[in-house]
Image (spheres, helix red, strand yellow):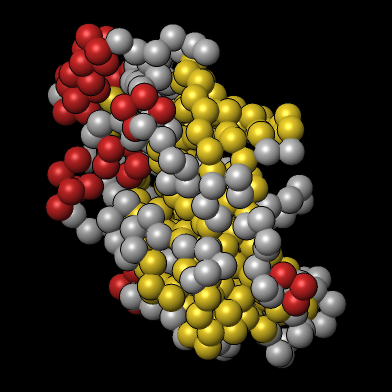
Length: 350
C-alpha cells in the first residue's frame, strides 16, 4: 500500500486546491484555435497549464474466483468536448468518462489509484461497494499511490467518481465513470440478447468554474460509449461522437444498453426513438425488472439496463427526452443494417 495522507497533509492540500481553483494569479489564459476558426478561451490553473498526460491503460487482473485487482490513474489530459474545443480535464486514465470497469457480484476489489496529477489530491468513490469512506475513499496525494479493498456484493450499473473536496469540481472537470457488477445468476433475458453497449451521459460547464458548476446550466450534455470488449466503440464525452460514428447492430437483434447518468447535476430521461424497452432493470439490478417502458428516468449517478428489439433497417436515435439537453449534444445513433455492418448510408439525429 502507498502512503495515505495524514490529516494535516490533507488539510494543507485541500487549502491549496481551493486556492488554485479560485485565484487569478495561479491561472493563465489559454487560447485554443478551433477547427471552425472560432476562438475558445479557458482558464487553466497554473500547475496544469502545460500538462497533457497521455491516456494510461487500466490494469485489471483476476487473482481468484472472487477477487480482482484494479489499478487506475488520476491524471490531466486534454479532452475534445465539441469539435475543435478542448477541455483540460481532470480524468481517470486520460478519458472522460473513464474506462468501464466490469466485475462479478461477490468479488473483492483490490483497488490502487496512482495520482499522476502533480498538484491536487484525488480519490475514488465506487457506488458499487460497501466501504468506510473516510478510510476506503481516502485522498491520494500528488505523485503517490493508495491501495484499498472492498466487496462488490450488489449487482448493477453504478457510477464511480473522485470524492475529493470540492467533489463537484472533481466530477464536473471529468473524474467520473461506470462500474458494472454482473449478477451471479445473470439477467433472465441473457439468452435473448444479441448486442451489448455501455452508454454514459455527462455534462460540461465552463472550465473549472465553481460558480457555473453550482449555479449555471451545462454548456453541453453528451453521450459516450465505453468499450466492454476489445474493438468496441470507445469515446470520450464529445458532442456528436455517437452520431458521427454510430453504434451498429442488425435487423431483429435484441440490444442491451448499460446506461449511467454521471451528471454531475442533471437528470436524464433516456429514450430510444423507434422502439420500446422490452425489459428494464433499474440500477441494473435483476430484481428491479420492469417491462414495456418508453423512457427511463435516471437521477444524477443513476444507472439501468435497458433492452429493446430493432425490427427494421434504419437509424435509431437515442436521446435524453429533456430536449434542451438533447439540443446541447445528448444524442447518439444506433444504426441497424441487414448484417450489422456499416452500409455507408447517412445517419440521422433527432
